[in-house]
Length: 234
Image 1 (cartoon, rainbow, N blue to C red):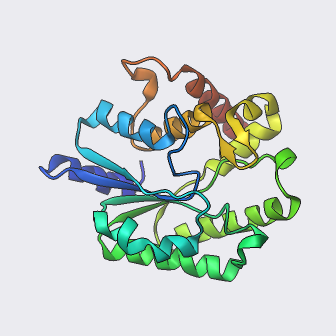
Image 2: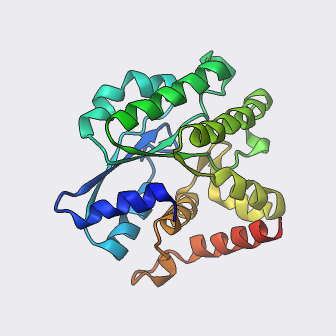
């Protein structure tokens, strides 16, 4: 368990509920039926720690790092979060957005500093693996460069990084049929894909959803085990 999460979990022992913010674009906005990855995290924390938290989702489809900064006051600072998940870059890398990699880097640093000023702990996330069969060639090439920037900024700012792409790439390459069953289109996952993301995030918080009293996690946990095995052998 990372120091960021360990420090955050210490707040569970206080009377104040910890506020967790999901901040990003369509990967974050809840717009499909079924469980979202952020729902999975909410349930996982409740399973292990009790109702010690409030989850707030201000994801906005089509958004960029520039947009996150522009709406920071109303959609982030307003909620005074204790922990934030920042998942951004899939639109920034789209040439149509006219947002180059230098600005992207600068925006991520500014976001980290802005949340830190609120005494909010930051978790950057990379995306899952985009489907090259269903994406524009230039955008997907840019995507990997922009993802590397997310990784670099997480390290430079002492933020936590959850690197979904690292795990999803191996799944896409080695088990493409399973991968495609999790994808809605080239840049978005289906509800079962969201669950795979969710069970991975839950594990970072010390929660193994195999121990859940509720059904519904089986497929996601099976995929997680496949990813674990691929990671072990890489």
